[in-house]
Every structure is written in structure tokens, then in C-alpha cells.
Image 1 (cartoon, rainbow, N blue to C red):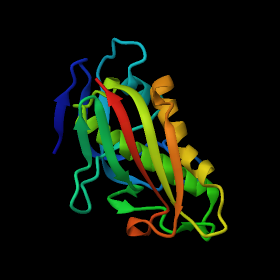
Image 2 (image 1 turned 180 degrees about the vertical axis):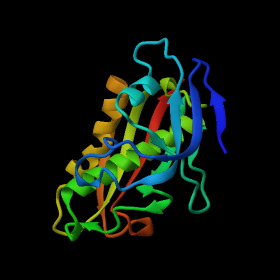
Image 3 (image 1 turned 60 degrees about the horizontal axis):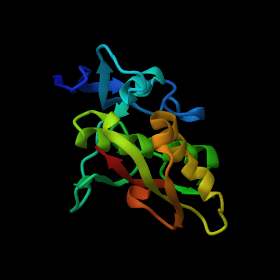
Image 4 (image 1 turned 45 degrees about the horizontal axis):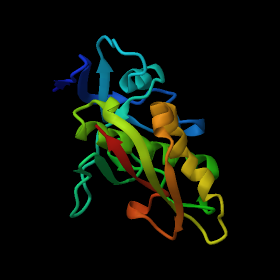
Length: 201
């Protein structure tokens, strides 16, 4: 079954099962996800710099927005602020990048995990904004939590996986304040979790 909604700019979003494009993640984890829910983008784009067009040009397909795992909402808006709850790396409906940095998860995979979390952040924002990511005027802040051993110190490099994605997709509007925090464990045993705050119109 397919469900479709149309944005105010004439783009069409079709939610169905998918295989992630091969360049949505860097390095050796390109093919970790298949058969997952997603938002596909099609139709004519008549505005330069459109975020959805940028995603399409980069070969990025947003994953389906994850449902909350406990008693909270995935997104909350107040005024022009959109707050996205912590997102973990999910592919094919299951947690991936399970483990800790410094013991089983290497730096490259940590960066890829943060990037995947960032894609889930954008998917939640897209859902809250009716599929129109152009309504994001600024990514104000990212919080990146890294499960790591006590002697692991490259938390900022891991966090760049999410930070680089925001700038890549949103341009100057994607430049943000950030915290990269080490912790002993995260939900479902994953290596990274990312939350976000956006300014929206």
C-alpha cells in the first residue's frame, strides 16, 4: 500500500518500503539497510535551493520517522521552535551500530551512526512540517550522545557525522551550536543518539 501527501510546492511524497540508496552512508556500511519504510520525493521542483530537491540530488532518502519508544512525543513545537527528541540509528526497523566506541565500534562506524541519527532527525522534522523542510530557517542546536569507553576521546569527530549532514542538506541554515557528550550506554545498546532544535517558519 502507498500513501501520498502533496506539499505546497507541488512535490509528492510516497511512503512505502524501500532500499536505501548506496551513498546515503559512507564507508563499509553502505548496504546495511533495505526494505525499510521511507519517504520518496518526486515531481517537479520550481525553486532553487529547495531542501527536498537537495536531498534528491544527493541521493538521500529519508527513513520513516520512528515512533516513540516510551512516554514522550518525537517532536514538539512552540512558537517558531521545533524540538526533535533523541533519535537512534534504526535501519529496517531495528537498531544498528550496537556497541560502544572504543570497544567494538570504530570511529568510522561511529560517524556513520551519527549520520543515520541525523537522517532520522530530519525525517521527524519533515513529518512535523508537512514534508516541507524549506520551513527550517535554522538548525539551532544538536545534542550528540556517544556511548564510549572511558579512554575514548573522539566524541567531536563522531558528532560531525550529524553536523556535516545538516550543513550538507540545509546549507548555511544547517550551521548550529552543539554538545557532544560521552556516556556509558544508550537506549537499545546503540552507539549514538542525536537530538535537535530548529527554528522554523
